[in-house]
Length: 244
Image (cartoon, rainbow, N blue to C red):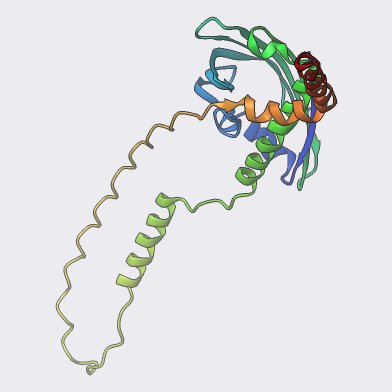
């Protein structure tokens, strides 16, 4: 099953490329996904999926099979298996970028292969559902890329120390006569205590499951409402005939 998506983000292509190479950060924008480990060539994690009363969790891994920084293009092979044996999922994803210093056009081509419960939906439904999920992903991605950078705590502390040292070295104007004895030397100020070492951030909370039910039902209602109405009318006629 082949799926195609395109979108634009309001930042330069180099910054977008760098962000997409941080798989752990990108995964935080996808509902239900969580990356447990990652390096420059591969990653591993899980995706939680809800399909009505059915809960699935795909554990798997992915590998960068191609990566071209100059062309801003990479290809990822990913595969996973439901931990309860209810199906498998595999995808070959090709991402390419083009743009300028102010915006980036992103193309995502996915060759998807799934088995189990989600496989009952056809390509049209899967395309519509993935379009909806992509909209949520792009909104999250834009917020991350355009958020103002927070000041570095270490740099700010260093600037404060320099300013304090400069103010301590400024001589106050003398109000006594020139022949007055010099004032006694002041002891140097005590050394500033070293700033506490930053503690490691708390572990990220578990990712919420991707609710395919809420995404699929509107698509099914829009795509197959005529068939549903016909079925209801048919059942009503049969019921009426049986009562006679």
